[in-house]
Structures are given as C-alpha cells and as structure tokens.
Image (tube, rainbow, N blue to C red; front, side, top):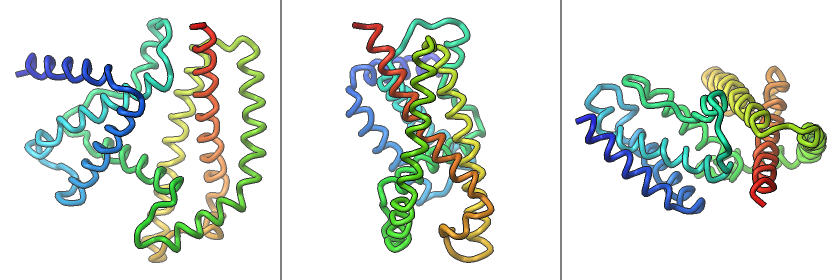
Length: 234
C-alpha cells in the first residue's frame, strides 16, 4: 500500500511540474476553498478514518504550495544546509491536522484582509480599508527604509543562501506574530462580542506594526532573490 501511494505521489509531482505559475496558483486556491468548505460542513477531521478521507487533498495542497514556491523563487545549487532550509513543507504526520487547518485559515484570513472580501462584514471591511489608507504613508516609509536596508545588504555580496536564510527566518517570525495577533483578536471577540477596531489595538500596536513590516520584508526578499537568480542565469 505504501509503495502504491509513493507511485501516485510521484505521478502527481510530475503533473504539477508541468503546470505554469498561474495554473498552480489557481489550483492552490481551488484546493484551499475545498478544504475550508469541508471543514465548514464536517468540522476538522478528528478520527483516523476522517483524516484518511481528506489526506489526498492535504497532500495535493502541500505539493501545489511547494511547487508554487519553487516557481516564485527559482531553485539554486543546493548544499546540505540550504537543502534542509528548503524543506518548506513538512510531511503529513498522523494526528497533526490541526496545524494544517490553521495554516490554510491564516492564508485565507490574510487574503480576505488584503482583498477586502467579507460578505456580511462589509462595513467592517470598509472600515479596515479606511484604516489601511490612513496608515499607507507610514507603511510606505517603512517599506522604503526596509528596501534600502535590503538593497544595501544585497549589494554587500549577500549570497543566495544568506538571502534564503533571511527569508525562512522572516516567514517563521511572521507565523509567530500572526498567531499572537489572532489569539488577541479571538480573546477580544470573546470578551466584547465584536471584532477588534483600530482603537482597540493599542495593547498590541507594536505587534501589528511588526507584522506589517515582516510582510513587507518578505515581499522584498522574494524580489531580491528572484533578481539575483535571474542575473546568474543571464
């Protein structure tokens, strides 16, 4: 049975490798929505049987996400240490589906915040967009400083492994901050019966600012890595 699964995984990987970035992105969105729809209907899989039912979707989602990362950041010559860092997606371990659902939820929440989606929460989303406009100048100034720092770092002969190391650390920091902010927002909702507004963020203001800074850093690092790799291939 294990060898059969491995053969299926190998064939799946081969198919994904032939997809374009746009196709992979579309596939990821479809899988993400299907998994969240499943959770909405049945809740998070708790028993072994339930996990087995949706495990193929887990595996496909992880493979698609991994391939999308590889397309966005072209592969480089891999040393043993950088190969270890490049394992962006861990294998699925029996009984550890909760973390996987949180990972998808986090991406969905970020996409909704950035895209202004919201159904019955249109007023809240509109207010969020107003707040974002107020903070736009501050963010742009921060991103400009960050871009300068990263460009200086890059011009000072930062190698690809060093840039990748910064990327992995920034991703880990973003994940940690997102968890802290989500816990604060959930606790606030439990106590107040409403979502967090701008004035309610005061106790966590530094965390919110740092989260935005880390997101900007990730975007810039990905651009730097892509440019550096492109220059090597010319």
